[in-house]
Image 1 (tube, helix red, strand yellow):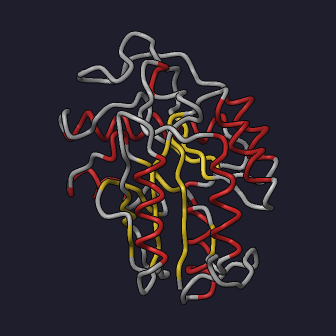
Image 2: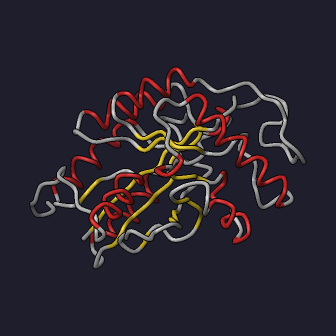
Length: 251
C-alpha cells in the first residue's frame, strides 16, 4: 500500500486558500499547519528564553478552511527551534501554542491533534513532552514511514530548500511509487515562491502541483492528511484505507 501526505507549514494567507482550492478540485483534504502567532513580529523565531507576547495569526481564516473540511494543526507558538532552548522553555512554548489553538480554533481536540515541529527539529526529551498532550507529532527524518497503526505517535518527513522543491519532490515520489510502499510524508510551505517570511522560496511548490495529485490518485495510490491516516488506523486498529482513490497504471 502506498499513502502520500503533503504537509504545508506556517500559515501563508495567500497560499493556503489556494492550496485548499487545488485540493478541493480533486475531492481531497489539505494538511495545513499553522504557527499560532504572526510572522515577523519581535520575538518570532528568536532565540528566547520564556514565552514572548505576540499577536495571534488569522484564526478567522483558519476556522473558515477547517469548516470546509481541511486539516488545521499546530505548528508551534512562535516558530522556535525547540532544540535551541531549555526543556522548560520548550514545554512553556508548546503549552502556550496548544492553549491558543484550544481557545481559537473551533472544534480543536488535543486527542486528535498532530503537532508539527518548527524546522522539523526535535529531541527525544521534547518529543516526550507531547506524549500526554497530542495524538502524534511530525519531525524530521525519512519521508517514508511505516504504514500507521493505532499506536503510531512519531511521524517523520523530509523537505527541500531554500529553492523550489518541485524536482526533489517529484524524484522522491517516483522512487516511492516504485517501492514496496509505506506512508510518504513531505513538508512544504507556500505556493509560487511565497516562502518563509516572504524572503525566499523555502520549500515552495508551484500552483500546477495539482497535476501531481491527479496523477497519483489515477495510479491507484492514496492521498490523505496526517490526521486522516492516523485516525483511520486508530479507528480500525489496522492499516488505513481511503475511499478517495482509483486504480490504473502509470502512463
